[in-house]
Every structure is written in structure tokens, then in C-alpha cells.
Amino acid sequence: MTSPRLTLFAVILTFGTGAVDAASFVRLGGVFSSVMTGNLIVAGSAISSASLDTALHTVVALAGYVMGAALGTRVAGRPRPDEPVWPGRVTVTLAIELGVIACFAVGWELAGERPGIVAEHVLLALAALAMGMQSAAMRGLGGRAALSTTYLTGTLTGVVAALLTPREGARFDVRGMAILAALTAGAAGGAAFVSFVPALLPAIPLTTLTLVVVLAWFTGPRGAAAG
Image (cartoon, rainbow, N blue to C red; front, side):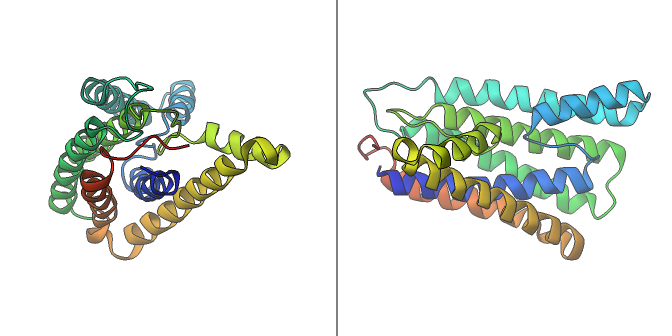
């Protein structure tokens, strides 16, 4: 798999991440489905203010994410330098995540615009489960690949470092900026869908995941390691 194609896959996945995170924050209790460090801060604030509901939401999100990361790690495994950048196991992990997002989509449609507390927690758990799996899938990339499509503080740091040392990191700088732009665009799109056409919100992550899984099925496992 060439580096541009790997970047394309990462950008597509990150766009879906932004949409899911925005939906979780706006509709599912004011917490994130992928940014667990942010949720820990929310949890600390909720504890200090005795907000049991918010604290419970953060616990649900964290539990879902941990379960997703554990399952994704079992499927995707650890990266090995002697295998393609995009091993078949990564595609399988994302395919399973697609199934989780499909369950999320069904639940989202059944819950309607004002989900009850139980439905809200179930949907949040499914979203976080999917994001945990995606995070683990990206950690399973082989060769010399190193990127994330969920938690992106490190990506932002890399972009800043690359801007200050362009000779060392120009390629990563382009990839990092594209991924950050995709997250912002996905979040904007997700928030807009929730506000104006909430029933269509699941179409964003369903489309992005399906696109990457289908493309990777034919191109990922057979590619050479990216430079």
C-alpha cells in the first residue's frame, strides 16, 4: 500500500470519527466516543459537582471504548515490521467495527430524536466500542506506519513539529494536517446532520467505514510497506 493511499484511508476514517464524536457529544450526554482523556476530565468535573448523570455517561463511554480496544487488539494483533503496512487483520477489525456501527445505526433510528436514558447509554456504548476497535486497528498497522484516526493530540503535535522542522517531517506534516482537517469536517458534518437531518447521521460512519473496508479488501493486504 502506498503512503498516499494509507493517508486517504486515514482521512476517510477520521471524517467518520469526527461525525460520531459530534453526535455523541451533542445527543448522547455531552461526552465523547473516542477522546477518553477528554472524558476523564469531564468525569472529574462531574464528580466535583456531584453530577451523577454526567459521571455515568463517562463511565459508559470509557467501558465501551476499553472493550472495543481490547477486542480490536485481539483481532488486529501487534504490528510486525516484515508485513504489509495494512495487514488483512486490520481490514477484518474494521469490518467488525462496521457491524457495530450498523447496530448503532439501527438503535439510533429506533431511539428517535429524544432517546430515553437506557437507549442513550446503549448508543453511547456502541459508539465508544466502535471507536475503541478503530483505535486498535490503527495500532495494528505494519511496517513503519504510525498514525491515529481517533485520538489526535499526538497528530497535532506532529504537525507543529513538522512545520518547525520541514526537512524531517514534510510528508507526515501533509498527512497530519489532512487528518486534522478531516476530523474538523467530520465533526461539522455530524453536528449539522444531528441538527437538521438526525435520522441520516449514521450514514456518515457507515459510508466511511464501508468505503475503507471495500478498498482495503482489494488493495491493503497485497501492498508493500509504505515509506
